[in-house]
Length: 282
Ligand code: PLP
Image (cartoon, rainbow, N blue to C red; front, side, top):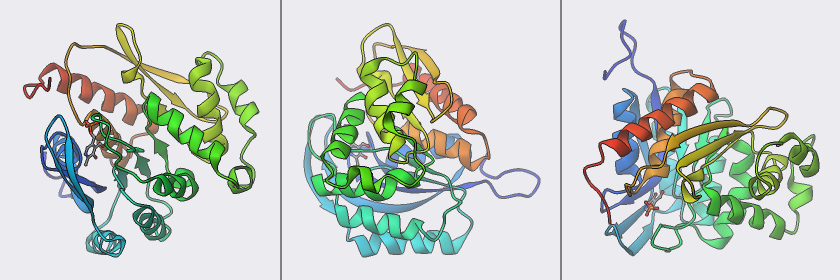
């Protein structure tokens, strides 16, 4: 369904992400996903990367001013109903994206904190991570770290000299949040509590890197019980799954679904995608 029916245009998602020449991750996956949900897409490309499924060979970051101009024109052309953020590459781009979003405080933002490729190449600089924690974490409607990213984000907050001062006023103390995360393993509760205390509105901690027969993702919000989304762990390796899930959730939010429904439908989409994966990567 390309358009929303009854003469209404389909919702529109702004994708702010990197291009992956292999097509395995980044904007190629985002567009494929949004199209599957019948949602229109517009783009702010943050970096051009040359990759195979096994390695990243080159990265060229797009100038922050050009990223900002892509965002400005996307917002000027038509309504944007949700924003999906993936690879940002540099601190300058993180800041430019945060500045541009300041003009659109009501648009939901799904932040996939892309830090490194599966092959180990950094996709966000160290100072970029600090700027992301400072500027984008408090702006996001949902942050979608996998387990390694959760650890890196929390460690980044711990290392920030002004970590406690930069937490927005009124944010509950990390310890109180930790207490509200009963039933969540300590390995997740402690770093998650730190991110929530720093102003992240909601976290979807993805269990794909964990072990066990099921992949369990946890939706965590301050003062609310944790919600678990389990799916069978399939013996398939598919790249770009983080991009696809974040885009699928952004599609749901753009369609005015609540966060729980958007996550649940995103997970269901990913499971179907795993089941029909033809482009298996070794
Ligand atoms: N390249 C780009 C442009 C990405 O956005 C991402 C992840 O979001 C990756 C590479 C890493 O993907 P993977 O972990 O599947 O290698």
